[in-house]
Image (cartoon, rainbow, N blue to C red):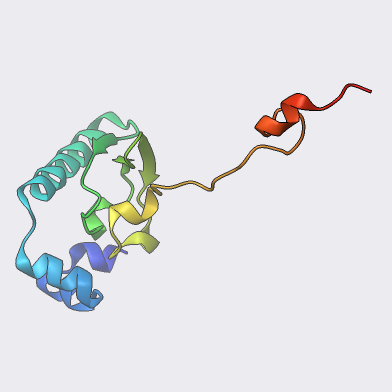
Amino acid sequence: MEQLQQMPMDNFVALLPSKARRKLLRGLSPENRKLLEAIRNLKRAGKASGGAPLLKTHCRDMVILPEMVGVTIAVHNGKEFVPVEIKPEMVGHLLGEFAVTIKKVVHGNPGIGASRSSMYVPLK
């Protein structure tokens, strides 16, 4: 991990899969640049204060870079902000992959009140 953090960006980009490599070679969007600057500022301030850094963002398409490791980012999933702690294994993936937008549908149990016809069940 230390080697990746010290590696120049051009060499690091060459190690990434094609989708992440193309995204970084084409340049980051202004929102992604703003997020990256906020992460850098948070890490600088976090080292001085020793607090657990937390940052909220809607940038689900940001590629996780080695300098982001150790930061907790709250990623919006469409309804709420899901805290995502960046770990070394996540480098090269997108932030949105770790904040799931859908959840499993759980239907109610069958029985009284489950359908309209169950309202007319005789009470024998």
